[in-house]
Image (tube, rainbow, N blue to C red; front, side):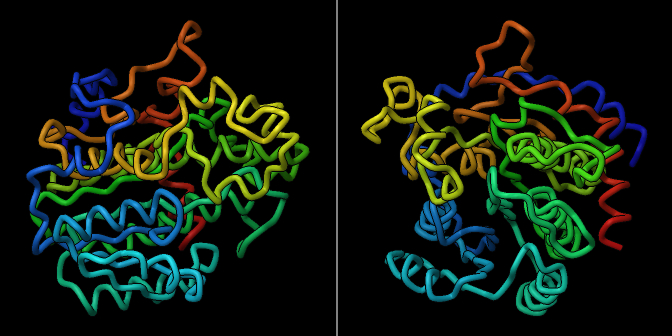
Length: 330
C-alpha cells in the first residue's frame, strides 16, 4: 500500500453524502439511465431473496451476470423468472473452499475482466456448526469463503476499468465486533447472534481492507446494510423469536415497527446497486452504506437500526482481519 493510500484511509469520513434517494427506492430508480452493456458481474447468493433481485436488475441493465450456485434445482426455478438479460449459473459452495477455487478458475478461463463483484450470500443466526478448517460456519461462509473468492478473482477485477466490490454486511454488526481471541467459540459458549455480528463486522472490515490495499490500482470496495427484509435468511428463526425481536406480532404479521422500517426484496437490493454503480462514490471507497447513501458513524446516542459501529470501519482491525484471513485460507 502506498503512502498516499494510507493517508486516504486515515482521512475517510463515514458520513452521508446526501444522495437524495428514498431509503425504499426500487432498482429502476437506482439504475435509471445506466447502461451496463459489456459489463461482467458476479453475484453470490444471486438466485434467492435480495440476491435474485440484484441479479435481475443488473441483467436488465445490460450486464452479463454470473451466479455461483449451490442448489441447481432451486436456481433453475428462480433464475428462470428473469426474462431480460444474460445470467449464467456456475457451481460453487462458499463453505467448501475447494469449490470456491474451482469457481474462480472457471471464471478466469471465461472472462478476462470482471467489473462488479457482489458478495451477497450469507447465513444468519444458525445453530452452531463448523466448516472445513474448524471455522465457525457463519464466519467461515459469510467471510472466509468470500475472501477466497474475491482474492482469486483479483486478476480479472484489476483488469477492468473502475471495478467495484460490494460486501453485504448488516445492522446486526452492531451487536459486536470480531473476537480475534476466540473466533470459533472454543473458549466461550456459542451464541448465534454474537456469531452473526462477528461475521457481519468481518464483511465490513473486509471491504475496508480490500479498498485500502487496491484503491491505488483502481479497485474500490464498499460494505452495505441492505435493510430489514423478510427473506429465506430468516429460516433458522421461529415465530416466537421473531415476535421477541419485534419483527412480527402474535398473529405472524409484520409488527408496526417492522412495517415502517422493513423493505421488500426489490427495495432490499437498492443500496447494493447504488454502491455498485453510483457516480457519487467515484474516488471513494471502504465505506459502509445504508439506505442508498453512506451511513453515519454510530455512537451511544444513535438509533438502534442505523449507523455503523467504529469497530466495523477501523483500519487497524481491517488489517488484522486480512492477516488472519490470509493465514486461514493459505
